[in-house]
Image 1 (cartoon, helix red, strand yellow):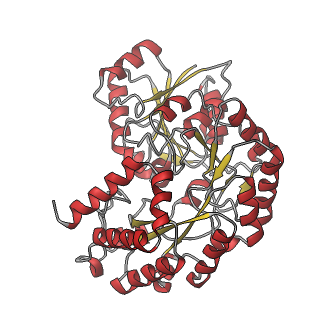
Image 2 (cartoon, rainbow, N blue to C red):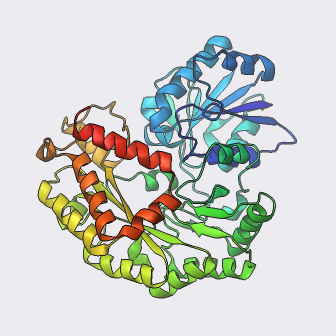
Image 3 (spheres, one colour):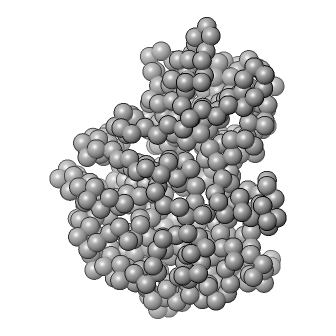
Length: 465
């Protein structure tokens, strides 16, 4: 079969790469099927472009799969509408974060034939094999959502692959890693030659604002150290990658596993190779020995995500963390010779200016080398999103905008007159004055264009330009 996998325009090519589509391509039998990835974000193709008709005419796919995150769901729908207007016989399949968290809403769109929730690397291949049968039986395909002949929506059982090593590494050529690097892809990395990997999946925590457990289940699963060694060596020797970002949510959940991974990486002796965990690690699942091993393995900084310095806000978030432990952990990070980066959320439902003051005090006490103050945005499918919809605080069609610019899509009543932009500018100036070396660190390790855009946006918001 001819299978087109589409990555819609709307993703920032400097921070997001279509790793999920690379997984799908590498885990399907490419000897049996012609699978091609069409990256509309990298190629700057929108739903109105004539290039879509050319793609359908020249490739003539029987199946078209598209990845949909919340920020691109509308564009994904427009692309599917366009595809069906060109050739209604093309079978359309949608997956990704938004499809997983809002399957009922997505399946209302008649241009969507099938939907995958959660992980689809192995299940999609099973689906393609089933499609080819004279009488397909879709009921046995895990994670699949589909319509019956009478129009009923069926959600098959969610399946989380226990043996992660069964999943082949993504096809980095198919997702045009080199082209992404040339366009400036460097996810929280100073090195242009960087690539992302996943070592663990799953999240046992119950934070109200997060969709991680919805996407990958609550049970944490692990790749073997042998798999890690082969993957890292491939990227280093074959793709000449210098920085590898482990983008897991819970790399350090099993502290011993993280240490064994570090030991494996140290043993590879790959000169000049660095590692990062830019999505953040659970700070309470660490110790001094782990930080020292991460430094020896090639880490230069550690990102942690306390989210708030307010005990009240953390309880509202259902984030199981005592903020009192954070300063000591930051100290341990720095003692290991690593830089410390912090992630925080402001504007959470029920939060007050007093809560934000608690967060500011924690940030200043920790003396981070850099930190990010994200505006809270409700994510579809999460408990806090459902609660806000039920109480009428946001519409059921609310979809988040941006975490960084200061233009919050949602603001709690208690903070309607609060200037988040002023808060950011003030605290970054405070950081620069009290820790001048942090300015040098940020300029050397982060995308200057991104920094300029964020600062300018916050200044414009402050003065309502």
